[in-house]
Image (cartoon, rainbow over all chains, first blue to last red; front, side):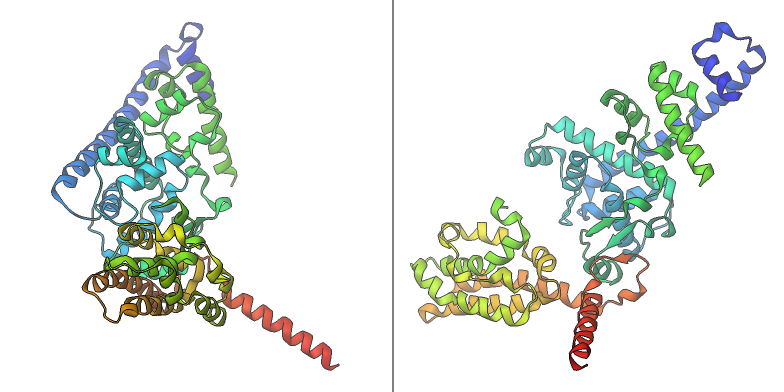
Length: 258
Length: 180
């Protein structure tokens, strides 16, 4: 019943008498919107901090990436072994990214363990315009932050769908200070459904871009959006909003049945 | 890196040629391509690899391989390509990488000693090669120190023991059948 109300309230406000509900719905929308704005600001601050830190440190790019991504779920300092293990998680998540985004991410934060590279250098190396490199790198970092925010830093949420080879395990568990890029295989059938990327659905590039700009990258990120948020906050066309909303609904139904 | 060496198997197979060329050209003293080829004993390399590695076919008929295009490369290009050897060797040879290092070290010495003295420039290149060889050895020793049974993650390349066990089991059942 509530879903029908929100649909009518969003798209056909003249057809229904919603005087009683209007205030509550608008209030709830505002609250959700404020919460999202707060989260987006936090991500923006982290990205800015990442840029500043880059200019003042010679740390390995991979280490920098791990620390920043996991700062969003826990503020404590990570030990060397914890950084190594989290690097495995990040690399596993990144395997689900579009190819170009993956390449840009691990060229900016080099898989060789070298310090973070400037966008200009990466642009020359990959023969991609600088503005695009910048956009893809930021998108990839945002994607990681949003995915990690759902899984947290609990190993239980990662072990079931990640396989590694002997070398990666040895590197991850021994106290040698070198950070080595992990060699990983994903067990696709065991990847949590909430991590399924929206790129896999029948949506146009511009819709995916709109969703990405709102920090929606996978099914789990859709949970905090109601239909009217998709319509008025993200300004999606009714047909697209309905499609996205039905993707979310079928995911939540599946999660309940599981 | 040169396109040809992006393939791990190819980089491992061509590694003796790369190492021989790097040392052969290091001191700037004219050394003929054929001489380096002869000094490197690639045939021995193939035979030796047959004794120790399960991936011996990688070095099969090495002596018949076309070596000229590698001879044309600059020393720094070769060293750049060889920097990827530790990862490639680990993937292709697994725990047999130690033997590859031993054999490559022999190639370095054979070529460096060819003109009687070991030149400073040859020592410099050998030093760069040593870093690469040490990295391969370190990877191998790291693996042997780890206890994989404690891993909460699935380990993808732990199958060797299981495969060997099944082969042994199969062989003993065949022996038992023959004895009946």
